[in-house]
Length: 113
Length: 113
Image (cartoon, rainbow over the protein chains, first blue to last red):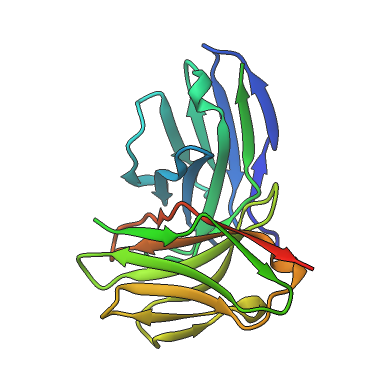
């Protein structure tokens, strides 16, 4: 069974640009969550989607957005990039985030110059 | 709101020695508790989870954790450390219908030969 796939794995952007990250969950998983990991702030919750509906959102500015498609694949977008957005963005899938067991992808490492 | 505190950002052990990683939680409702491990340049992998079925939880790679409500703790242990245990370990908590995990700051484990 294939794991959670995130693309791209690495990317470099400049301030003011926007970026879209993609996540393909484990087959059959309908919940997709996104987390930001930085050395200073650790792991922080961005948002969670289930059956194309956002059920929970973390404390991030509106520049951070996401969506989920009917096949459960998810994308997150960050607009007007800032230096502080440099981070590892982790996607996790589960049958239902309410069950708690999340399976993580290897992440997309974003560097903003 | 749920939160966890991991005591000690770095732990160094000798190969074959006991590994003990401390985690205390704060939760207004019975929590779901988890330990994840992260190897360099990888995502997070679930070691074990507590969901109220049993207070002593056994996980993968010889790790186990004990839920102690009176101490609000969920410490992770492994009787005998192996070089491959060198990684960063995260404790996490989720409340019922919370749809997100709140992570601790992480503990980096180094294993000395």
